[in-house]
Image (tube, rainbow, N blue to C red; front, side, top):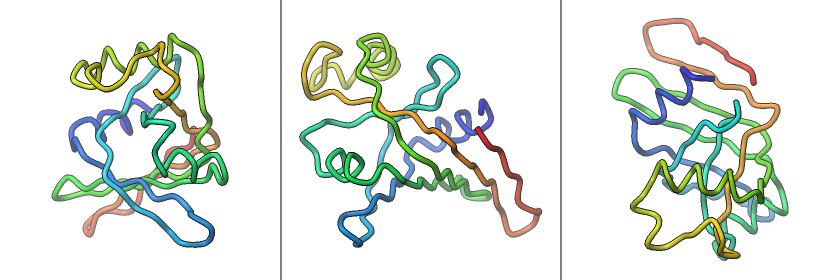
Length: 130
């Protein structure tokens, strides 16, 4: 999982796909965190992406570094613990102007039953499950 985290962190931006009543929705994200051995993302509960994930927690993200791309698919599980939110916000201090581990909007979610696939045009795919 460390390799997945390092790749996403180095890319800076990845794209998260969710389902909105049968219509795929994709948007850029920039938050990624490792906490207690799990891969986390962050959003706000008031956003459409949060509502989509609560209705259907299956999601996939994709990132590209110019040579390789990574897809991570799985189920995103909400973690309402203050410690998980604080860890994410400590990793992204610029978000503290908009979010707090104590507000009712900050949402962190971790991947469960996830499969990561590293791909390129020149090498066979590498799969990691976590």
